[in-house]
Image (cartoon, rainbow over all chains, first blue to last red; front, side, top):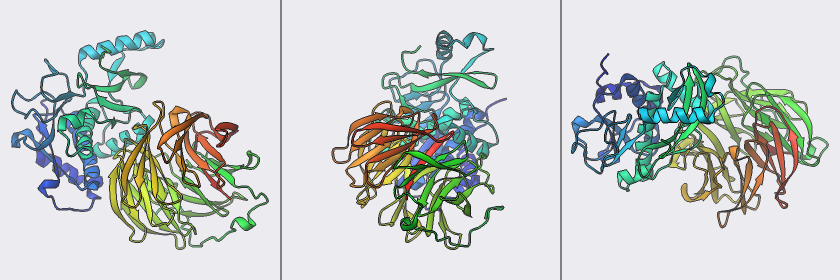
Length: 250
Length: 325
């Protein structure tokens, strides 16, 4: 099934429908206070839902900090955006080099010379992570069809249960890896923009520690710009293990 | 309003320290989230004197005189039930005296000095609830950050700080206006807040940040950040009575950090039980008590000697600890 197109109108309508956003006091949008976050291209359904959820949560934070989170698509123009979220990289030159791009999946040629960050994993990295887990875990031999994921709806420590519960309440479904990656991409871009409003955006994103409800600070590796994060080994609906993914693990 | 909970219309005035029990020593009260109990410890002997059943899921707690206030909640997030609320027990008898509505899923709470007003952080609702304990009425429900937990009241009772774990924010409540008047960011996953007794500073722990933010209360602004040892996952924080030291429960770091409030340096790290979250200090500033969630006990630290002098079994999921007379 083709991925649904995500429009700003869809996202704003969804945000306004959420109790979290509705609970916030109404406030006029003023351009100087705005944080423009852009989506490039079409997102798969799970990622689109994760992004919507991320925008709803980030809107709470940004409103508390007297900034207005504005969501749009890259087609409307990128100048002044705090970042771009995409599954695939925009074509060369389409995004100003100072604007961070957070990719939800691997792409050929990454990293590029610009300001592209990656939260998702490559197949090569998944395979390497699985091999490493098999070497380190005595339970590995018994696992049926183990997979490597960035998130799982049964996680509960470090506020994961609360995050999973909030997501399920908002969307009606479980938070998958794709949904978590999109949620995290929004959070990272908005958090870094709020924390370092005057810093160059790429520098702010690369220099910020984030909480992704994984029990340790998440950062983008300064060299590879790949997210350092715990990964989870799952079999069926069971989480079998956890390992930290860092640059050089592959 | 919550169904099934008795809205407390009687304002229970029980004794103050002058007529409290037979022991002049303060007592430590440890909430045990999974056991559904509160353990009462005599700080003179460091022995358990009572277990009070407070279920389900007791977490934040406070004591005023003989009244023990405990935040209770069910295991069902996003669903307010008659199990969510603040229960009040008589610390001498364990009898439940009153129950108050304090919004959905209250996690931590604070009281003003005379015990007439209660402030609770509502974890799943993203709100803070202010309740008048004389009437049992909710005075205000305020939007704060996402997943609020830590809550502290300034010594002059003018400000209440509410930390929010997911939005990494601290919301400042003006207790006169009953409004949020300011918000500011701290390091990732703020869990607890404490004011210095002199009222000039507040300290906010950040579990994922591995740090403690130092707040200038006059400006509601972060003026410094205390970096803790790499293993620290700071949660509970208390300040010495003379405001000279800050003590931080390092959670999964299984230790307590001693911080010099002047230099903002860690001057000692004392190993304790497993995963200390709650931490409290005796009024004389001589002893610390922790609530160790994974070992189900409380570590007693002699502050001058900087070592654990007793480990007291409390119950499964030890969560918070307060000192009361």
